[in-house]
Image (cartoon, rainbow, N blue to C red; front, side, top):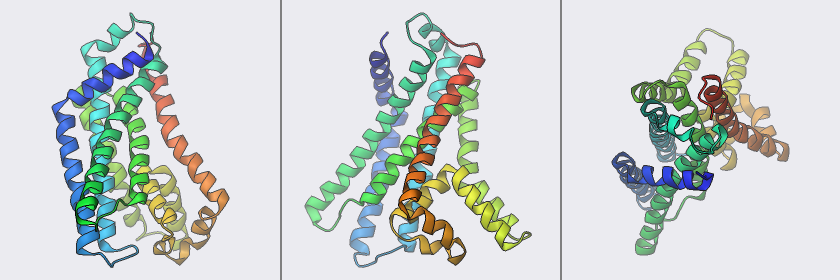
Length: 271
């Protein structure tokens, strides 16, 4: 089985999944609805507003949740059902399997994003007041790239589909909720400069916060982080900072994939 044939097979299976179809309908509806509210109900509001924050939070909450659950359960299902063992009889390596699953997952959610963007552009053609937020397009793509890799890693850790579901929910909750609450709790007992350093570390080590920081960075609204982060945001607003941001983003994509491959080999499931 060639790598291209494997990717095509995995992609078709994902597109035929009713769960994936429901996810597509839900995300398209939410994306189009919030875009409509942003551009029609509040046409003159600029900058980082409560509505913009709501859009960003929904984007970061919905996409990672869907990607983590579907992606991790796909890998775990292969391991649990014996499909991966069957693939061992074909000339396909562990690396090809991992990258094939990643690309198939990536293509599936890119298609969902494309449908959502098409609906927004269609509303623009009808009303003339709705436009496609380019920054959110980039953030959506980056979210899919990063969390698809993390989903693959979660799937290799899991022993069953139920375990994969639980693990993906834990990763989602830690990234989107628990780390932020923990940081706020720590902030009540440590000095301000210590909290600042911990926040900077968390921005780099938490993919959700890294994407959220990317919004502030590329929208030119880093001032919302406060004056204590002036030097930090000033560096990332420079050319070197943009290069470093790209490098860290690539690491968030490549490292989980490499770790997933290493785990499969270590567990004796290499082909």
